[in-house]
Length: 208
Image 1 (cartoon, one colour):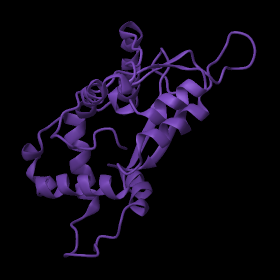
Image 2: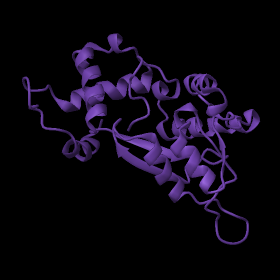
Image 3: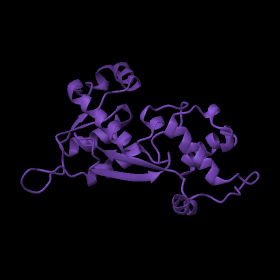
């Protein structure tokens, strides 16, 4: 990390003396360790010694993701893997549904002639977005939801029998377009560890 980059990041970080416990080690060293890990996809335990304790860097990453120090990017991607709309929320605290509606409100679909459309024909999204709130939002706006139903939701619907209603429609062919989001994020990040999703379970891989 260059001095200029550090000068922009340092004011955004917490004080080095937390409310509990002793003084944290140098934030810059920790961020350098985190950046090295995701840039090279090196396992945490194999971080070079000059970065200090790998456990300290790993724990700091998780703590900052949980308390909102890091930010999380929610975005839509077009067919060319470009982000026409995005919203930034604090760390891992923000729910997907509120951020989803904010992204959709910003979305504009260009036309060859005339003003851009504000309602795409369909929205492919992964299972994390299979909620009644999101499906209702899309239905209200006349947008086709292309979202697979998680196993627990499907099992609950079957358990309810006729009261569970019919399963939501799902277009497997259209769902293949969902990978444009992952490819868009990888283009923005250009870091091997993020592109390959390496790391331990629960790591905040799509935060910035």
